[in-house]
Image (cartoon, rainbow, N blue to C red):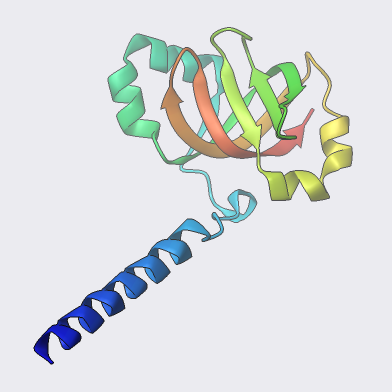
Length: 143
């Protein structure tokens, strides 16, 4: 009889753990468009800050919402349909994947983005790996 209660307790704990895990896995991410930026920076100086001292810049910006103004040098669509914008430099610039939900409702704005123009994006800084990663992101201003 005692073993029956132990087995039922273990099964209950497994089910509760699985439920919490699934809830966290399918939790929608925050709406970047409605969040306030912790920092507003110019693209070139933002990249230089990472090149000068990557550890300090990572500590300062990682997982924070950043608003970045810079020159659009590339606009690509990835195989999964995500729009990728690259600011300042194709090799060592700022790589930002646009938020999928935001993209659906702002396709005309995305289509209007022209290479060489200034653009302001807002997104979560993920760090530096050959380039600064910012995703998910939204376009704030297209100049």
